[in-house]
Image (cartoon, rainbow, N blue to C red; front, side, top):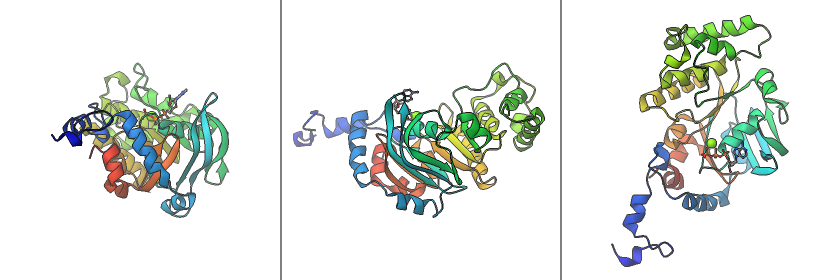
Length: 299
Ligand SMILES: Nc1ncnc2c1ncn2[C@@H]1O[C@H](COP(=O)(O)OP(=O)(O)OP(=O)(O)O)[C@@H](O)[C@H]1O
Ligand SMILES: [Mg+2]
């Protein structure tokens, strides 16, 4: 390795650098281009951030979900600095970006888990900026899919689904909705009377998604659906989301560390950097984008 290929700052050779940088986007744990390096490069990409007009165009000209000039965070700590988002009805969007960029915070803000200092969030014609999570679920048709073992292990599969309908006016409605879930997913139906703890990782994720469907939401917020799953279950989860979008017309906003899977799935991809939108495009175009490839796809 020629000396002049060494990084002037770190003294690393080209070979050492290549070995260190590996597959951020594959969802592996064998990290990564250094976090600082990704952040620096991502800031550079952000210099050509898309305009709201470009975002609306990507959304097909008519936004069903929109976020305008959003400043939001936790307590007094602002995390999102003027975030913009436009998504058409029935479209899917995947947010990617470095750890800590604020991706989950975008979902939290839409659902009502953050402090919103200024800006507007709209769903349909409705200004939902300051609605509480319960209202979002019951009145605005937004569901946030909890995960990381959010199923109740000692309750049966069926009882877990009923829990998803706790905001329904009549308990029978939740039961009816649960029956529709069982018709759709025989895997769950077969285990309806067993405690949820017997489910496999993939079945558990299916239950988490289905439980959100009991409220019959129009917009699904999904944070890292593939996390912790084996490849065959990852594919299953994406197939389920795909079905919810294509056959039921759900509008889906997801965050996915596995950028390749997420961008393959989604109509639109956004790259988020330091609490702002840095880049946006059709999912398949972002997959081919050299900057995205290098930073998030391990290419
Ligand atoms: N509940 C919270 N209270 C206070 N700060 C928070 C909270 N959740 C997140 N943060 C902070 O907000 C910033 C953005 O976090 P966020 O979880 O949105 O990032 P992310 O892009 O989803 O990252 P990751 O890829 O690691 O999931 C981080 O600095 C984080 O520490
Ligand atoms: Mg996150």
